[in-house]
Length: 396
Image (cartoon, rainbow, N blue to C red):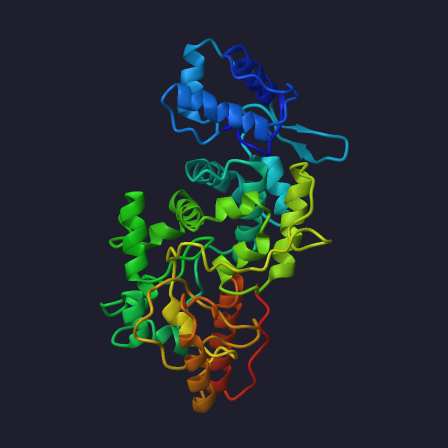
């Protein structure tokens, strides 16, 4: 049974509305659309039965309603005439047809193996409405290249060598043992990086990521980490308001790849049959990208972000930053590990970063950008040793 909440519609919503009316919580109309009136009536029903009156029809509310005679009939997802998907009834907000339309380059074999774990993670972390699913899938599609990459490419580059102790950067990541840099490199569709973050996510999810860090790249765990990050950073609530720009800021630290993220997002909205305009576009209410009020939940390293200038060159890392996420270059063609030759510019950049209270504003690039940059650095280093120019940075 799917969770019923404001903003969705279907026969099951109509059945719920009819049940509320029969239980003495009347509605102005029974139309199968979960609007404000339905939310308020639901909250009143929950309060009357000692439930959390959040206006969302979840498992506890449905269990109470079932004891009072409610029987909701399922309405599966169906394809309409223009091959988009309409969601209704007990169906999940994700299935193989939906995922294939959002990520057309995802191979069928990988889709089949990933889908059960993606679906489970989305349910676990309340990514359970079309708007939430559209925003989440758009972001992970961009970050992982449609699930092509589930871990950081390791050189090591000069930047990656700084992941190793003893350095300020390593301390920011919580890397304390030799080899921790590679051992706890970025993994998953929303990459988790550094010993401290592996320990934190492992403890929260009940998985030992310290003894076997590679588990963080498996679909069983990788999607749960992404879902946990999404949930703990309040991104579901932002998705409810179609604030993709602010979501991007919270994930990326800036707005790198925003155009492609929006492309995935608008495609997902079409597939889900969602109307309305994304905030900040075509005269819709502004989405400024201000994420200052959103709680900070770490996933990689702010230390890495603060260690790179705008050209991806290493500068001094701040000793006081907490680990948040792995960074990439601003452009895929410029290697993450390029050694800094502009000390003055680096110092100016570090000083500017110090003015940021949250310390995430300088994170740039998606997981895919980071992999391209690392690959470029590795190729460039090899070419230099052989006395020839480095190849291009196009990914395979």
